[in-house]
Amino acid sequence: MNHADLQAWLDRYVEAWRTNERAPIEALFTADIVYRFRPYSSEHEEVGIDAVVEDWLGGSRDEPDAWDATYEPFAVDGDRAVATGYSHYLAGPLGPERMFHNVFLMRFAPDKRCAEFTELYMQEEMA
Image (cartoon, rainbow, N blue to C red; front, side):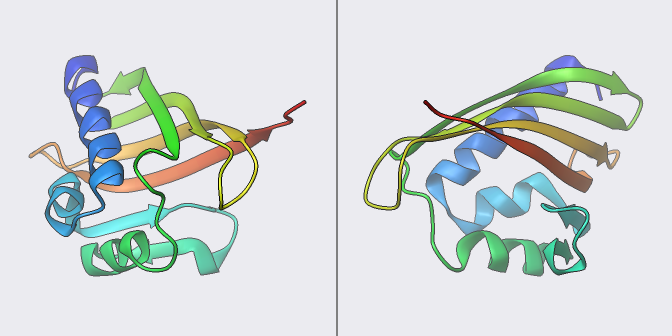
């Protein structure tokens, strides 16, 4: 894994989020992915691609034009990587404008699919 590989993966991650379709999500992760989206709560860890896809596509989905996100590589060391960026939700029917600053901690398989993904984020106070 290198910075260019990681940027390509991050771009596919955003596109999968935007399209909300099973195949692009599955292409990002290994079959045994461990996905933590609130790492300090056992209720917010998914294990296995089916659980990740179900969680991603279940419940309320983010409409493609209701948000913007940009992530970029911060560090790559062998199969481990760190990315930083933001997720910006626009004001709309689901709520007010919100900005989140994100850090992704990742470990990749040799085929460049993510095997472990931990998302850390902090919500920015909006004026």
